Image (cartoon, rainbow, N blue to C red; front, side):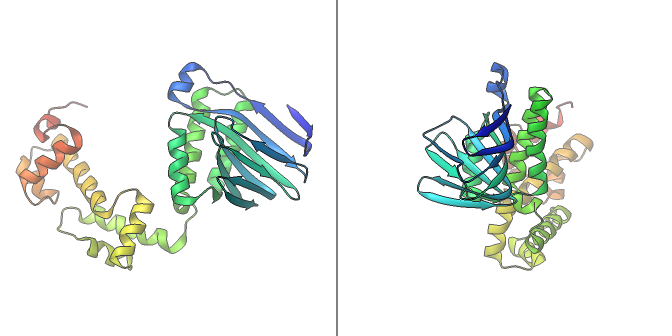
Length: 276
């Protein structure tokens, strides 16, 4: 529906969305979405509106205040707001925005994770913007709940991994070089120092940057690569457990068996007998 007044100019529109009970249990779902052309009279001050709100600023600026912190977002920036808590937002001049109130699944955990890494004002990449456009378009087209949920999930993934999607130049290439080094050398006795050397940065900074980028510490990532390769060998070869342990870089078969069972809940032999 089109809206005019209360700080909104011609062209402003919004759409409400009611999820099914199944969607509320299993999916991500929007509650309301819209495109607003705001003037200096636009001001929202709420105690709560149970959802998370993403506001993408196409032009102008929006100021948001939550829990004593003020964020001023401009063109191509995104504001994330926990609307379960008191909040307000407004523009001192004009703003053109796309926005999505959404919830479901583990949405608040996503919000808290993104907030801890990036804050509540985030550079909005082309991929994230496309997701927001699509969410609004899909609601207008009455697309299925699964289609809309998938787009919301993609939006969250893009926001969470913004620095990689946004090609934060040198840092991204350094971590990618280290990741490829691990994949090519997982069967060898490589150290974090070896990985950091490949990335051309200090060990301490490398460990921090790698975890921020990949989601694993360098050593844990190495173990996951070894584990995945071991699973492949168990399914595709007749190598003994001891041989697989050696070929995947574990220093003993007992360590390999312990780690494999800890991560999968199965012994290597039981995993070998599973049919896929």
